[in-house]
Image (cartoon, rainbow, N blue to C red):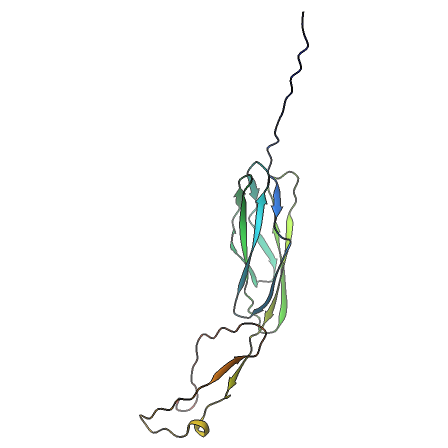
Length: 173
């Protein structure tokens, strides 16, 4: 006699699961000529390797990919990061914006994730006290004589100012 036998079959689905840690990055006020950086974490919550296309930024050239700028392969249960930099060079106060699309290649359920990037390019502003030093303050110096005068530099702006040097100019400087 032939008996019917039932067999339970259990199968695990092996797929990557694409998740991005944030959908926007605000760099805030950043002095022209300086820079800030932020990271985006990409998680693979699945159990197969996730492939992510080479990232690109569209919009303002003040934004750049500093790390993670190649095609990423993330093992199941792991994560990786992309580092975005903001380095404004404009002279006028301006809001810069761009987008960064992160596109999974092999997650069947996921679509490209958009990350909006914004930053406020703010010119630095300083005040010198006294505003100038001349013979009316120091007097006339004979050859070989020295005189010391202090100048106070005050940051009157809304962002950090990076002083990288100084020079004396003018007649007989």
